[in-house]
Length: 279
Image (cartoon, rainbow, N blue to C red; front, side, top):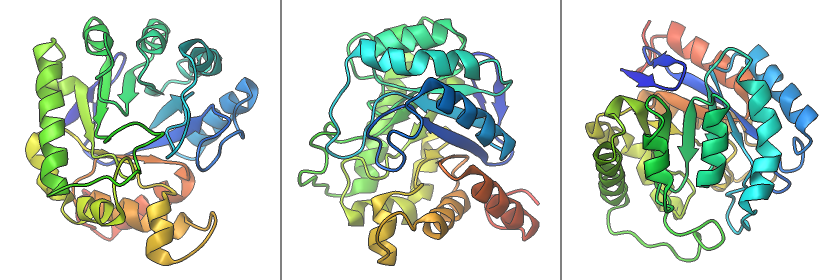
């Protein structure tokens, strides 16, 4: 399988590691650390040095309860970082739902639009379709970040997530976005109860029937603290365990904060012949 993007046809013969660059004041894990463009650009280079295959750069925090910046504010945060990142020789993703930001990013040569709202905002679908090779990741989220954790309810969360993603994939194809340009994300922690997140991991292989690569983000999520009982930011071991479990169930892109540790874990997993990885 591969993922077609603006400048790269990404081979998915092995899981790829997407390094997170949050250019925000309030992201749940590293908010404010890389709000300065210089710090964010340096972090891009650091993640590549640690072995990242892709970079994902975003200017809107989507943590539970987060407010929404204006399009102008979001664009001001990410534009200089994106402009730097596209010169680093790897696929670059912009993490946004705002069509104005998408357009500016794609005009800079950005490869992928990673949209937690799955191109549902007015004009987003048509905009991405108008760039004939741009990649896109469509994610499932119930509600909006400010309200998504206010008592979400599902009958069968895996079936409902699969149905939503299938519908968005169909909508993308109907707008002229070829399937090879699309990856899908079940949206761990986005409008999900603890039992929903766990079901999505345990039954993740059921989403493979959608026929597109799965991008999964368990890194440092609060669900890991609930599972382990560890408070604060001590979530690295749990993040690595979740990443390997996701790969064993067919994930082909891992969106992570801790790139070096994830790359090392995958290297050992590969040597050991772990499921989901070529020897």
